[in-house]
Length: 373
Image 1 (cartoon, rainbow, N blue to C red):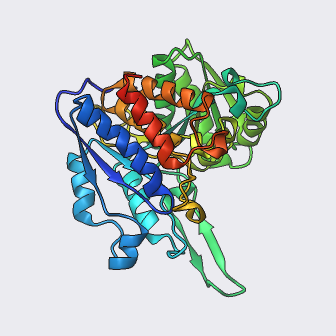
Image 2: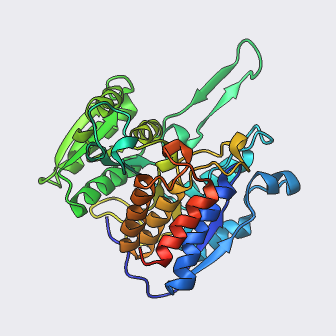
């Protein structure tokens, strides 16, 4: 997977605050980006977007085509917080925005680091932070989330509901290659793949077969296969065995939330939705640069909104991934080191053992950045 080139021009970052606690945590992440722009002279422009449940309820608009088109043509990254509001039970706005970005921009790889930053955040007896350090590559544009299917005789006793698990050779291969190329670039020696090919014979046999075909192009990396239920068990019994995991959309969604439990909860889980450029694949747009979509993993948690209790550290870590994507990889390491200090010094919210509110955690992060941390 190719590394981003060093920045040579100004970078446009679109910011979508989301619903529930989204605006509170994104506000702290935005302060970090503003620090880099205003005090470190990073060439970043911030584009604040009014998208979410409030706008949808006010105007009936979910994701305006002109905004979508400008993101696709001009933005370098999108910082998004969770979408979901009980006032919109059908989640129409959430689907249009999130899936519109993921599917519309062909951001086929959801990359989720599962890395514990403190021993005390690891819930497993006898395990330390050193035992929880891997990354999951989740296929992001196919599978059961592709939305293929339908309902017949809805609301009757004879109702029929079908969702199709859509997997293409191109989609499977490029995701698997992205995982192997990441492993190569980061000195990893092992890649696992999770499927259910013993039960979902046709679709997941494709994953099994392509995984080992791609692995043959990376002889220095060990390729291991596990059925997804066995992988979930093994993640609890011995998380040390994992370095890089590649898997389908649904299984990646489930396994990464399990992984978040190993690293201290969803408030510590960052993610990126990207279109890695991979070698040796059938990807017709090989070499194109694309906008990346960056989002902390946790949900909108409407009952917590406005209470200043939401953990912003996942958003801070996500900003690190965003800056690395834009060409400043050292800043991802800098921000991770600051988050480690926040946990160790209890400059964090209650869910990870601290006593600060959302805003106060952001204050501390920005102050430490200002001191050159």
